[in-house]
Image (tube, rainbow, N blue to C red; front, side, top):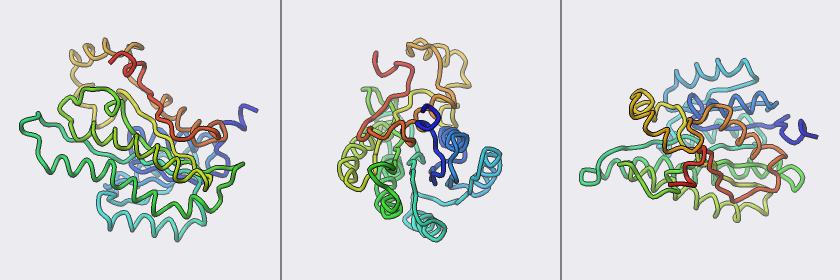
Length: 260
């Protein structure tokens, strides 16, 4: 029973921002859980292709480089997927951006860039790929959309990343709205809200030992997240184990959001 519950057997998946960090971890998890095929996207073509080659040791992983911050890049991805697949089972909206600056100097371009990539792009990508997600979905075999939010969208401190925190609150609410909109099409929509994980975006902190140790004291479990932590929750939400879960925002943060 357990193997069947958490099986990704025969599922066709798309993970945006899949070339590194959380995206690569979730992609590996899906493939190891038996996914038939996982497409990953990234803005940098070489990084995307190299990551797909590395991840292919776990199963079939295909690189579709594109810049989802532009309508042209999104259309390229959608056209490519529609030419290759009759249906999709899982979409992970993981591609994102941040912009740090103090309140008095925070620029409009930093606000617009982050909101566009973190909120606007996921909405229109879901809109464009909904026909493929609906195609094979049924009450017994639901399709799954997983949006990557953040505890920054839950707690009340932006840490000079104002547009990022606001965008993650928005993606949480978008998750709830889309879950009701798409439920009748047998598409479940949930969000994962990670706390601190090792990634390009958090290198500034993990490379500063004093700051790193100080922040650990704000995390009840006294550690940062690892690849298996994000992959496990993503597999649960994308597999039969999550078949009755929709519209939820699940913090994966070692307890940070409980005490902050």
